Image (cartoon, rainbow, N blue to C red; front, side):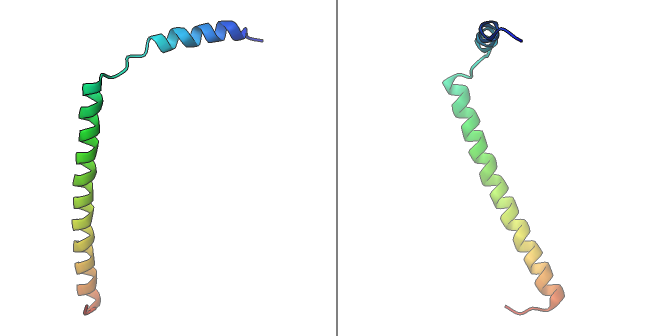
Length: 63
């Protein structure tokens, strides 16, 4: 059976090795995520519209 106190000491030692991002790095990453979400949304909107046009043309559906 492992010693729980030794385990907690090892957890604290590993947690102290973690390098946390700075506020600037966090903000830059957040902005990049929002930009990628916007670009992906526009891409999938355009792809959806193209597929809709192709399917309606092939099936002869009039809107």
